[in-house]
Length: 162
Length: 94
View 1 (cartoon, each protein chain N blue to C red):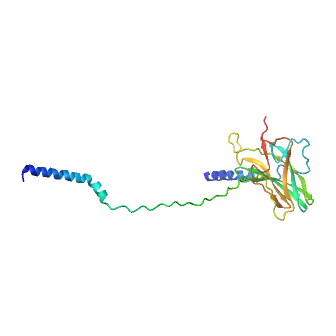
View 2: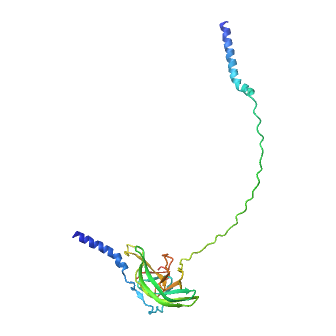
């Protein structure tokens, strides 16, 4: 009886991080058909938004010789105590003329996690989410993979007062 | 020899001995062979060397961009940047 209880307890502890990563990649996704809001209060490469806020993504690309294909943006969660987890994937088709800089709208995602640095007081364990960041692929090839936590583009969240 | 005479002789001998001991260094000084002459010293003048002055350089400060673009060889398009847009929020930590 005791052995069974210990086994169940160990299994539950192991399942907590596993379930964290098992979150579907489509969760929180906003398709490119949905237009960004008309009243835009904040736009930039490093922004802070309230928890639950929809965030829309525009990617700027350049091609020397011209390119046509699919640009894919993986929105990832930067977790302090776990390895980074994929949050959602956005895709769009793009045609770029030679020497052209083109901005592509890819849709967006809902920033549902609250940025939290450890904390025991208001309890943000486990994993402790820091920020959303992106990886960019063009026709399946990784063309942008930032690693600097503070230097890269990010979306961090906060709990609005009141 | 009488007792008194022998005492005087003894006293005289002692006085001579003391005087000898006293003057021994002086005697030795005069008896020792002369020192060889000291070698004459020659002053050597070294050539004066002038060192070239180090050129003053102004340090060049290179600012490293915080965001680097990864362009793998053979890729058709390269990433220039991202713009996040939201209805509520801020650019600074609230």
